[in-house]
Image (cartoon, rainbow, N blue to C red):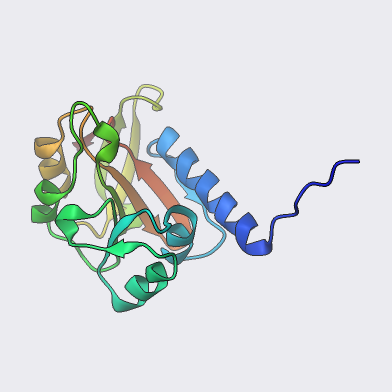
Length: 178
């Protein structure tokens, strides 16, 4: 008889969060429910000691440090956890990878409000035609600046966190402001 390890409650939550993140990236514009509110669960699911991270709050930095991840500047970070409002000038400074290694682009986790605010139309892989969404909490010019700096296959992924919901915007998604 074979014995299979039973995951702990923490491991199960991390796996569920990781599944939600991957689902959100594979279906841009469609939000996915998380088991809890906030960005801490995303840190737990994604970050380990091999990651270079930037967090804009001391609490999140301390939380991420438990994984052994190296805190770095925004420009050098593989993962950015931004709980405070951002400015569009951040986007050109993010890691975008290279033609040879596009996977070295950053993953950015931002707080936003889904369902109200600016009207956006998303198209690209994972979207059946197009999908319209509404997002509040990001600065004016955010999506325009993103469009100007992205050069697919290089770029960065964005996760928008609204309480216990997450929405993914991969680098391959075109975002049109309506």
